[in-house]
Length: 114
Length: 115
Image (cartoon, rainbow over all chains, first blue to last red; front, side, top):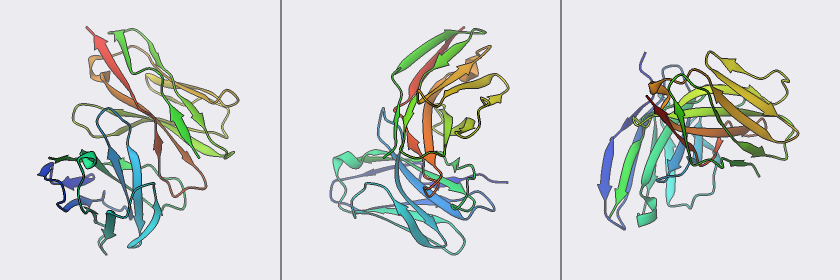
């Protein structure tokens, strides 16, 4: 049983560009959450998707957007990249956001903005 | 708003010894969950242990145990018989029951295990 997978592993972009990160949840999971982890910091919640809709959003600008597909996989899009967007982006999947279930994390995508 | 505070940026422990990592959690909610996650150099966040706030008994998972003091908003992690594989970043996190299962993390404690 594959766990949470993310692609790509590493990514280098320049300021002003746009980037798309991808996440496949653990088998059987229907909820995907995205987190940004800046260097030396703990992860910060970006948003969560369930049933192809954004359920909850953290304190991130509209440049950060997402999508969830019918197979529950998800994408994170960041437009107009800033140097401060350089971070490790973590995807976590779980079952049913309405009740507690453990979140399983992927290995992350390291984004560097030059 | 929820806040999670870890005041120990780095800790070290001798192999086979015991170490305690500290965390405080502040929320206006009465029901919530608290967690300790381990993040090794491979970057994958791994759940170590969790505690439901309504439970008085402290959680234990093998060599890992917590000391949850609700009134003091304290949630510490004790690692017994430390092993080299325990070396990692440890993050304290919280989740309110009213939330959509999103987690609020502290800034982490880097644990070094000395052979």
